[in-house]
Image 1 (cartoon, rainbow, N blue to C red):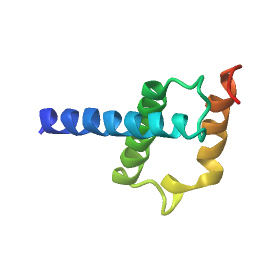
Image 2 (image 1 turned 45 degrees about the vertical axis):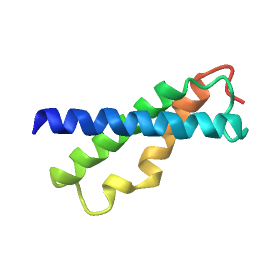
Image 3 (image 1 turned 90 degrees about the vertical axis):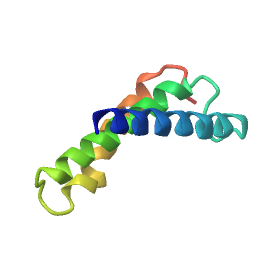
Length: 83
């Protein structure tokens, strides 16, 4: 099971990285963004939200945008080259 889940995570990171590369080419994401790191960030947040949901986080809290948007905004604004 562990190997299966690790494979799933890696596959999803790769798919996200490819999609983010397309978004960079389309001008939807700044060219300075490292797409592989962005994909890893998204998967890390996804995994954290999954753990919260599995372990009984209060209803709706695992997808509460007010709780998570500041974290995402902070990361995106941490890059001085972010457009």
